[in-house]
Amino acid sequence: MIPSLYEAAISPELWGERLDWLTEVLHSKNIVLVRIENIRPEISDYSFHANTWITPEMIGEYLRLGLNDNDGSAYFHQLDLYEFSVGDEMRHRNGDMSPSRFYPWLEKATGCNPAAGLCLSKDPSGYDILTTHYRDDGPFVPQEAANMLRLIGPHLTKVLEMNRPVNLLRHRYGAFLDVLDRLRIGVGIVTANSELILANDEFNRIVSTGDCLTLGAGASLSARDDHDARVLRDAVLKLSRREGLRKTSESLRLDSRINENSAYLLDLSPLRESRGTFGGKFSGVLVTVVDPFWYTDLNVGLMRQHYNLTATEADIFDAVLRGLSNSDIADHLGKGRETVKSQLASILRKTGAPDRLGLVRLAVQLLIPLNDDGARKGSVTGKVL
Image (tube, rainbow, N blue to C red; front, top):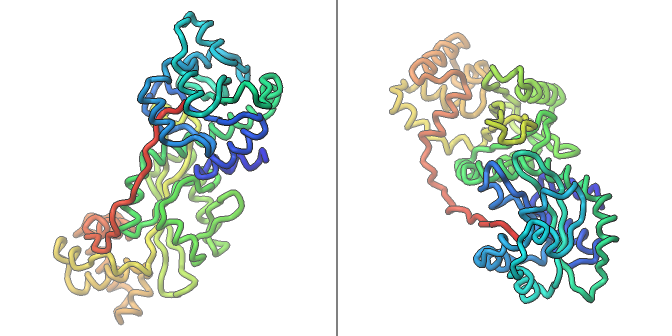
């Protein structure tokens, strides 16, 4: 079961189930993992995971009553890694001898009497802790649980370390990705090893068609064509390297297997951390992809009006949105290749776009999302017991 813990690092929906398993292993009732931030306090508002028995109502009441200031967790970073603390030991050790407000609430809300916890990781930016709650008359034995957690703890530490960039990226880009879903623009974030750690629904839909992009073992992003796969892998690796950050982006054209006259346009941009946001360890690439079969949603008329394009230039721009090459456009419009090249250069000059993908970006900016299916509902989380 331990290997399955690592799956939760990039799939938040799996945390509850995986921690249910750990609860059974420890013979306790509740388990909560939480990040206590020293530098960015807002991160603690969402970087937590709990087993399925913990309800949002419990979390809300816990925070509303301010019990997080009376449960001893603020002192867990003083423990050695994977050292178990039971009850109010840490709170009392730090001179807080006031009557506990936390335990009466815990017993009323969950039926548990004591609590125990340990530190999973600590550095200048903050620390990760695990807390578990149990009944006096239950099968929970602190020493046995401590021995088990000394074995499992390092794995949890690694999983949380892997999960932190995912949490940050979801927190930062979640609403943005929802908007791009409705604009039918796929956006994914991959590591230097091409592991997909975050994607919006449109990106997942494009991958699911199997026409261009694929997901291999370990959520590794690749291309259906072997040559395209090598090109994509090399581009991701180059852009994610620190010495390669001078190049701001790279564009790829991946041919469709369903329609030989269409191609997917990919834009790859390096994601660099800022001021240690990801602990100095995250290096990845933002992948943007436009499905050529949805190109009609991009309003060429607006582009023609806004940038004073000729009718021929508008036709060529329309073909660009479908991912056609210059030779394909020439055949499609019955024009010479040099004419198409000259007209495309005129379009780039008028719009100020650097390349073909830049034209797609401009069209997206002018797009009116007529098929808006409503705002997506998000979840709100907070610090937990």
